[in-house]
Structure formats: C-alpha cells, structure tokens
Amino acid sequence: MALDGIRMPDGCYADGTWELKMHVTDLHRDVSLRVTGEIHIGGVMLKLVEKLDVKKDWSDHALWWEKKKTWLLKTHWTLDKYGIQADARLLLPLSYFLLLYQTHEGQHSMESQRGQEETRPVNWPLLPDSRREGRDAER
Image (cartoon, rainbow, N blue to C red):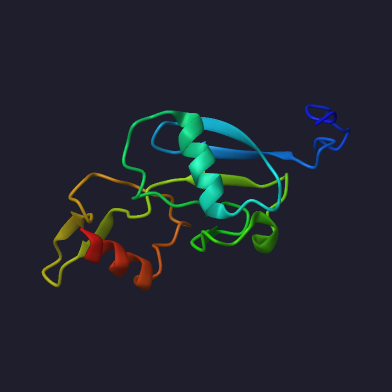
C-alpha cells in the first residue's frame, strides 16, 4: 500500500493503523504492535507472542487493561468493541496469582495454583471463577 509507514500528527498512520503499547511482565519488556481497531484480542496476543519470539507456554497469561482495570478475556472481541484506542497500555501478566491468607489459628500461609512465588499489584483482581475453573480443568 502506498500509504504504509506515513505517520500522521496524531500518532496514527495514514493506512489506519496505530501503535498499541504493551508490557510483558514476565520479561520486563515493553512492546509496541502496529494494529487496527478491527483486530481481535486473540490476534493481538498472537502478534505479541510472535514478536517476542520467546519459546514459552503463554496459556497462563491474559491481557490486562490498566486504564479500565479489566481483563480482556473475550478473545473474539475486537479492540474497537472493547473501546481500546492508541492511548491504551495493555499488560500481559500471569493470570493466576499468589494467595495470602490467615488461618483461624492466626498463622499466615501463601499458595498459588502451581506453588510458585508470584506477586501482583493490589488493584489487579483475580480472574472470574469461570475462567479459573476452566483452566483448572485443563490441567
């Protein structure tokens, strides 16, 4: 296309694409993907994994939208349907986290689904029960 690579003053490209900023928490790496609003979340994840070129099982990860504080779990939804635009920043963290609890005897205990030491910011909720149960059934 003749308009490929021509960047407009608003940061978008003349061909209708824009840079989606993402952060991969495991790798402590920022990545930009050139996308349109018509790409679905599953396609974004696929492009991201291909760009990272890291051989790893990414099935324990999900996209988190910082601004809206929400998981992007509907992989068939497009960026447009979620309302994600060029100013968004997405994270790709693990989708399960460490659980800290206190027993009735006053002892503290930590557990994760796989027994790994994982931490998360306080404002990141756990995945909805239906998503966790589906993953547990797959293991």
